[in-house]
Amino acid sequence: MRYPRTMKHYPLTKHLRLLCAALSLFAAGAGAGAAELRIGLSGEVTSLDPQYLAAQPNLTVARHVFESLTDVDPQTRLIPGLAERWRAIDATTWEFNLRRGVKFHDGSPLTADDVAFSLARPLSIKGSPGGFAAYVRAVASTTVVDANTLRVKTKYPYGALPEDLNSILIVSKKHAQNAGPEDFDSGRALVGTGPYKFLRYQRGDRLELTRNEQWWGKAPAWDKVTLRILPADPSRTAALLSGELDVIEHVPSADIKNINKNNKLHVTQTTSWRTILLHLDQYRAQPPGVSDLNGKPLSANPFMDLRVRRAMSKAINRQAIAERVMEGLALPAANVVSPGVFGYSALKTEAHDPEGAKRLLAEAGYPNGFRVTLAGPNNRYINDEQVLQTVAQLLTRIGIQTRVEAAPMSAFLGRVRKEEISFALLGWGSFAADLSLRSLVATPNADKGYGAWNWGRYNNPKVEKLMEQALGSVDRSKRETLARDASAMAMQDLAFIPLHHQVVSWAMRANLAYVPRTDEFTFAHHFTPR
Image 1 (cartoon, rainbow, N blue to C red):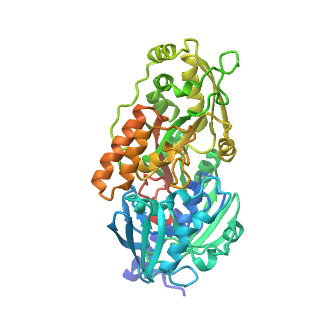
Image 2 (cartoon, rainbow, N blue to C red):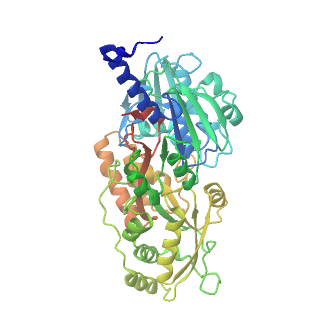
Image 3 (cartoon, rainbow, N blue to C red):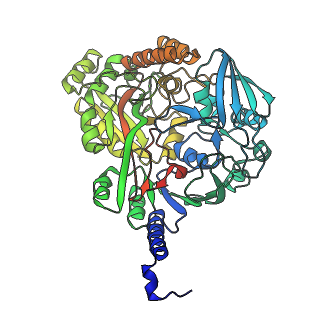
């Protein structure tokens, strides 16, 4: 329809012009179309099966499609998920009441049968390099009371079950019962209750999703979401600057200043729950990669001596790493969890004291030091390879000649699983201190799900007793006190050497908003136009 030029004076036309302008701005911020959001992810996605590998990149994509009984807010505080409420009937019995009216993407209703199946499934998955079995090891049985009520019996008093079940994504029994990894990657079994449904997946490149119009939650702003897999930092930043992407996660520290100068973009940040730490072999008499200065085996494992571990900790200048290597994207660490996380205690960060470190080495019988190999990933954590090189230089200065072996995360983990590494860098994040201790320092116990990431096989019965008392308490105040005591004891004994807590960043178009998450997750349905 054509209008006369004088139409511009009519109030209706003025309103239309304002609406068109608003829509134009919205489209410019949302990417290729007003209803599409394009996100650059920083990690490799290895499987779309939400219960195969407990790796952050896999979970990031999975949580767009699947949901868990309990959820957490951006500050990692526990909130309702698919369960509207839950309660401890006694020390070993929990009851979960499901939301009514929740449907899977195929239109079938979510029932307690699907939940019971989902809680049992992780124990049946074979060949995972790091699965979810640990989160259900405490479960003795599940009882379906009715379609919307489930009771979970634990093998022993266990207060951390609601947190553990946040890690178990609920799958459709009908679609997942006989499904293999290829069924999830193809989309055939990728049927959840979440805000987005599967559209297509191109391994190593992208996952495309479409909005679930039947989702029980607040409707997301985006009809379509494209999750691009871009582990290389320069590629992610370039794609954002060129307009190919609307959002990127884990912004390279070197790029933040320039992005903040761009009035079409902005950065949002928060302290992550992730602690970067160093595991040390504390179980083998002659750990691989450790020798005297001539390359000959030592008579004993130096890492088993607390004086040596303390010397290594004193050699590390955490403040310099945070300020220079991490370019401000880190807080020096002395704890197993970061500030604000359940069970955090304000322990004093080890001071940089190279002379004191040398004295401790001499006391331990290593006045001239020894040789070690430090291994870690070069594509997983912020500036991870630079951190490895810096730690190596600092240790070398006190006489511990350190060589670095950095590799992509998948290759690095393969060597760890083969027990080829005795000194390694790891990043770990959790909802609570006692849960972190369970994975990182507890004696490996497959039946209880303990010590899955205790690479150094650290063993301290006193720490473990306090940790188990914390995990067993359904009184959250008592549990937190015990968790603090256990983590303080583990850190005094240097079960591992903490380096820093990451500061996590997202960069995005200026007219997008995102509440930064302590757990580092990037969720399309939490981005809003502004």
